[in-house]
Image (tube, rainbow, N blue to C red):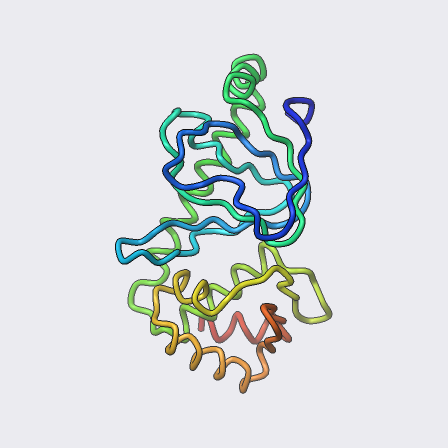
Length: 204
């Protein structure tokens, strides 16, 4: 798949895919981080997911040809290969192992979305925020001692949408996490000081 398409580089804060557009190309992320957002009924941007080097972006439209289901924006510089829908589908037909891997990736994303909905049922906001930060740190964080650093920019409104909570409540939850020594926060960055402590807060 890495031989398909053309390598492209995007600066920070560039929209790579826009929700509802009829484009159908696929992006194979090589380096960098992107955020996936969706527009809510009250015209807010809800953070749906984060993707980074090694992930596929835009494969839903490349598979079914329907309009884009979300917007994808670069968080810092991003390098990717842009692959046309015909080239992608031809590759899937010719290479069964690649087709199986792509299908498994799509199923994993859908399972993760379902697991998050179920996991959050009955949890208070502080617990949901702790779980979101823990999941992001495990998946995308850079190991740092007993903790991890989340270097890509994530705002409190984005944490609020991921946690299904109001922004002021997320602000209070972050303060509690800082006071516990589990995390520290900087300008658009979060550092987990202790993954073990954060996991205890999130899942005990």
